[in-house]
Amino acid sequence: MARLICQPQSHKTRVTRQPTANHTLFAIVGQDANALQSSAPLQTVTLVSHHLVNQKRRFSWLNWKVELNISVSSSGSGQAGSGSGGGNHNIIIVVIIVGTLAVIGGLIYVGFFIYRRKRYPPSSQDEAGSSEDDGYLQTISGAPVRFTYRELQDATNNFSNKLGQGGFGSVYLGTLPDGSRIAVKKLEGIGQGRKEFRSEVTIIGSIHHIHLVKLRGFCAEDSHRLLAYEYMAKGSLERWIFRTKEDDPLLDWDTRFNIALGAAKGLAYLHQDCESKIIHCDIKPENFLLDDNFLVKVSDFGLAKLMSREQSHVFTTMRGTRGYLAPEWITNYAISEKSDVYSYGMVLLEIISGRKNFDPVEGSEKAHFPSFAFKKLEEGDLREILDAKLMYNDKDERLEIAIKVALWCIQEDFYQRPSMSKVVQMLECVCDVPQPPISSQIGYRLYANALKSSSEEGMSSGMSDYNSEALLSAVRLSGPR
Image 1 (cartoon, rainbow, N blue to C red):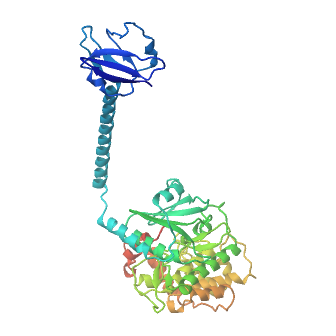
Image 2: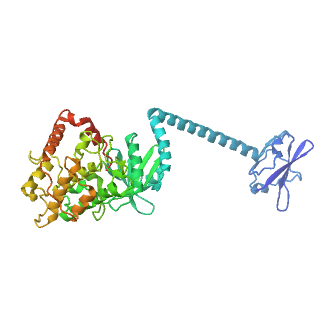
Image 3: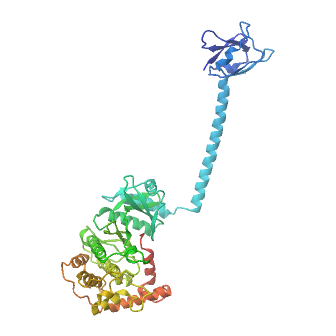
């Protein structure tokens, strides 16, 4: 691209194009062509009443693609402007437009931010809790991987595949960059949800056992609280023992017994093999997860309580799920690992029978299944306790053992309940299982009547002696599936 250079000569200005192949173009314009003093690249030329030095009018140079905005009057008083001046003018216009748009965009963003803050104001508890969590998580040794929110958002395809809903939030299926699948629990709200988050990261993040679900990582970013677990393909035990349709898959007795034994081993590890005793406090079928091979793993430690080895009992706030709560929860007595034993016994009965322990749809005799099971065991009629859809083998001693273990676990007096390590020994036939006391069924009938009354009257009566509001809270405190 050619360049034009202006050289003043007397009252004229000489415009020179440099360089040229074999010749130079000269043009004479008025002294007021000051805009041409800068040697900027130009593109086109418009000349009005021009005069060439050699008096020859040749226009072939117009093909040089040189831009020069020049206007020369016939009287010789000309006005000239350089292409660079026009280019600068265009640049200024573009800068003004872009700057204006940027300012408008900024104002819109600020306005939207203010609107969001006013409509959804973050509580001081949220802000304080976020920084508090950050400091707390830094102190945990051996903590799992810390993900960013964007990483888990990408892993779950923007939380598009929902696996389930729980008391504190939802669970979504995700895939990590290495191809492994995870279940991401997205905690919602504040208060107890944040306590659950801390409890999960603290407890399950530092322990490892074949029958405990593995925490792959977590996210604590701004107000976001997420937990990433290994994905358990078969879901929760609940969907396998409480069949809602005739064509739903049926678990055979061998699989059920192995699930019961595996769950007992996982709980025994929590109670006896960890540095501190860990009371799960929310044992129920929904919190026993199954992998592709129906290997059971205990999950959801959001309501767990830590106890030192020196402690035998501890007072704490009501937590758990109605129907699996030990009597000491209801009577506001101190709890211990034996509270988990009771809940396990209730789940074991449901594994054996394939039904809920309390079902008002059943006849009055079977409405509270534990009382019915005590009666049938005393009569020696084990077939009535086993799921009617399962084949019964009267030579399989495991059925009688499992029933007796379950009824020992749900003794009203927690001193009579076995430890979970003892439960494992009994299920593995390492030791004998004596006949459980039958007289304690009176307590279960009282408990059943209270639950039945609460179900029929919406907790308005019948549960006053059992802290009905606490039971309602227990349902809400049940963590995500």
